[in-house]
Image (cartoon, rainbow, N blue to C red; front, top):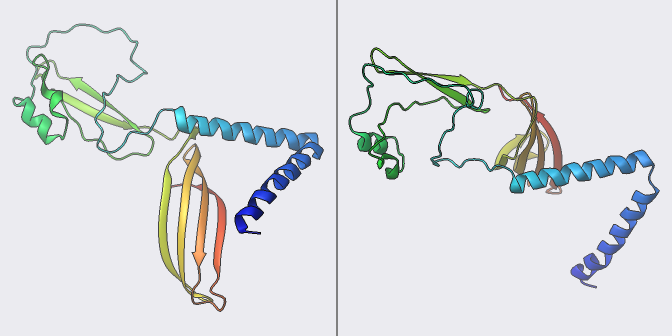
Length: 213
């Protein structure tokens, strides 16, 4: 019997066996399995239909911060407003799409460079009504109490073991969730030890809790 035929014959048997084990398991264990299955299904749906991460190099409109979006606004009449004289050249230097400079009613008032941050940032711009110049401040947002994550990592490595000599590694890692800055990860590794006696090839699965600092 070929390997594929063996797999086809054993898979239904294994599924039937696992289903029987589920039916005969204690009630608390069945509820736990169901909760895990529901959580996994919800996570997969969020990965598929939730807000997708913004790719590097993408230009998007930055909405008003939700904390103040509904606050009342007032009209002011400053003596002057200082803007960039060559809007098209400034847009080009900033790497923005050329259409961002197309509206003749818009002037380029301010552009800020914000530091890299894991959890996002908020930039606030103030206008000096005497000089007409802007002043911007950036707040680095703290880690949320809980957030789903979906960042993937793939890599290879080489190391030296005191018992097995040269060791090679390939891994695939994924951030699953974050709890106040602690990242919960799932990881799969394949480790090769070609210098060992039996040239051992080993697969390992990990559940990690990582705190970057």
